[in-house]
Amino acid sequence: MDNKFMPFEDWQFCNEYIWKSRWIFAKTMADNPHFYTLRKDSVDDEFVRFVLLIRKYGFRMKYGRSWYICLRVNDWYYWTMGCPIHNCPKTGTILINRKECKLAGEHSYDDIAEDYESAFTEDIFADEDVQTADLISRHNTSGRTLEIGCGSGMVTRNLIFNHDRYVGIDPSANMLEKFHAVPQLADLKTVNTDFESFADGDRFNFVFATYGAASYVRPEFWNRLPDILERGGSFLLMFYADDYVPVTHIYSGSEMPYFSATEFTAYCDISVKKSRAGNYVVIEGVKNENLSSEKRL
Ligand SMILES: C[S@@+](CC[C@H](N)C(=O)[O-])C[C@H]1O[C@@H](n2cnc3c(N)ncnc32)[C@H](O)[C@@H]1O
Image (cartoon, rainbow, N blue to C red; front, side, top):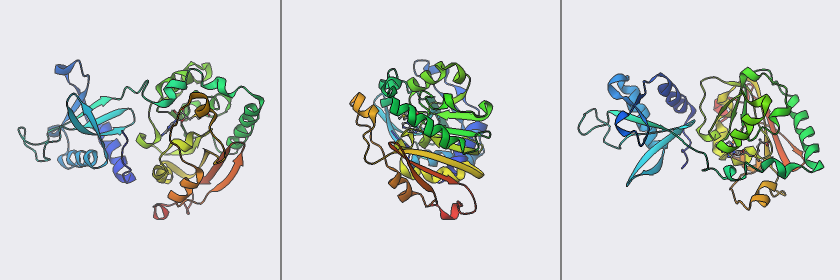
């Protein structure tokens, strides 16, 4: 159930279309709460473009006995009934539906959220915390900051940053629940989404992912980094080192697929600094003239 990678210009268009459209609650289907927007209320070209993008980059999802092509943007699914694209109330496509993703319990990390932090109580992990906080403090954390895979906020709670300009994302609703239970993180903005489905109208000054969170993102989606960063903005991504078996995997018996830093560099033509911090490979970079769209895949 994953979106396919789409060019950033199209992805931004989807986000803008969603924000400016009027979404009406479908009163007749209270057992399947969802909303819809009407073609007649949209600029027609924009409606058609969004529908075609859903169909090209979405994934198949079953509801009842039927399969639909859905696109996920943040914590919502978008779909049509699959009719031809022409504008006819009887045989064409005249509305787009959307429904909130109720992700709790669907992500592997939901199962380990309760005990996640107890896997990191040994001294070696405290050393890693210090190393990680030190690496992050070298970046500008006072601007718009995106944390990918913020989890229960184990690192976040020890950082100094601008709380009003922070966004944390994570596909595990249970990990986010833990995050908001930490008093100093309770009011921070979070979105229950993976990076692959994340869209935001504004760019960020700093993007980071700690303790292996970067390893769960499908590598082609790192091509979005230059687009979501402000010029001069920077990023720090921690991947599991190849010689390390993630402690959460041992502990939970989970076999979640993940990627290495090598795959990041294979997919993304971005000049980066690579270093090692404990069990992780750290990839850092700055968006400057060299990190332009021409250099991306
Ligand atoms: C090893 S935990 C790290 C959590 C936190 N960063 C920390 O330092 O404790 C990895 C986190 O990445 C999240 N994650 C998994 N797949 C993801 C994806 N595709 N995009 C963003 N986050 C993801 C998991 O739900 C989990 O909370």
